[in-house]
Length: 193
Image (tube, rainbow, N blue to C red; front, top):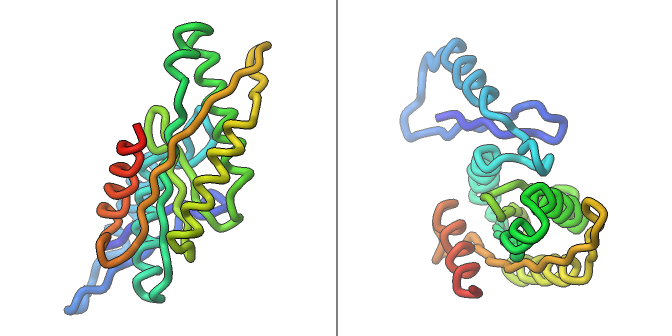
């Protein structure tokens, strides 16, 4: 099976999983069709300029394989931006969207160069932090929450504040798949509601 994921320069990278029997004649046309299919899905969210959910999940699959092969840490941090519904009701949806975009830009500045971040949902972001143990993921989440809470975002002629909630999922014995790590992060986020 081949999975495609975005590289820094916007190109697509690929990773293949080798089974216990060799795959012969996978076919260049089949790989081209898979690549074309992957490229048909937008890699960048039009509002935030960050990766889309689909591209994040492909990246997570690739990072997961690499972390397993090299026995490295891998963490996922899910961030929910709170207060956007209120801003949308009081100031309009365009202001809420601009505020979400501004929060995305601020979050991106707080990450390491090799971390991946993208839009994970309507009001959520996902950070994939490789070589990041649990303590590091929690510190990253705390730093983001603190910085977002202290920032007054200048959006459409007004100053706005939002807060975020954070959930972390760590590759470990209890989370033995990318899906399990995401589920753990989502459950931790929901527990903070």
